[in-house]
Each structure stands twice: as C-alpha cells, then as structure tokens.
Length: 164
Image (cartoon, rainbow, N blue to C red; front, side, top):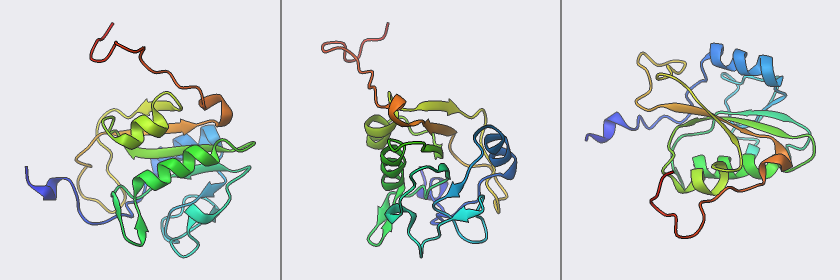
C-alpha cells in the first residue's frame, strides 16, 4: 500500500471538540501536556517548548492526544507519551486519559496498555480538527487510573496462540 495512506507528516492533529467535551464531562481534565497553544484543550497545558514529558503531572487529571509518529531525533514519538502516561498515573491522585490509534499489535500497547488500563474503542473513524477526511485508522481511548491499573493479566505459559 502507498505510504501516504498512513502518514501525513503532521503530528499535531486537534482532538475533535465533541469527543473532548464528552470525556471532559466524565473526567474533568486539568492538564493537556502535549499540544500547541492553538489547540490546547485545558487551561493548564504544555507545548513543545515546555516539554510535557519532562514535567511532573502529580495530582492532575490529564488529557493526552500525543503525536502519532514513532518519533525521531529531538522529537519523541507516541511510545514515549504512552510510557509517560502509564508512569505518571502511578502517582497519587493522577489519572491519564489518552486518545490513540487502535494499534493493538504494537510493543507499546502490550508493554503499557493491555492489562494495565481501561480501553474504549471508538466506533467508526474520527475526523480530527483541520482535516477534510476521516482518519485512515480506528481510534481508542485509554484510561490509566493509577495503582489500580498495575495488575497485569497475561496468558498462562503454553497458551500462546490459543483462544478460549
């Protein structure tokens, strides 16, 4: 398949406002750690200049729509943000809610999400702010709710490839 169907080179797609509003009604977000000043969803936010990956999020209720790229030198990718949300959620009174592509086959999904977080798959494809078309991938909401999410549920040994 053509690479253009999977990447635009743009990493700052704005969360659809209706989706943010629905989640904010439930979680009451206090921090958007990876945004631009133009697309920030919370009163408190960090742009690239403040580098949200280097900040302490303790006590915050975080909404994170990270860059979807793998990252490159000087620009951390999606996995760095997933790891940060997982780690920060282990702190007292800290919840992290992420909007992510539903890529259940990735290392990050199995290392930080599956078995550690609540996963909500979004029906259909989202249309991000500034886009004329829907995303070429399904999306999911991942909710890290602190120490309650540090229990891992793995298949027993010898069960690889078996279902049921």
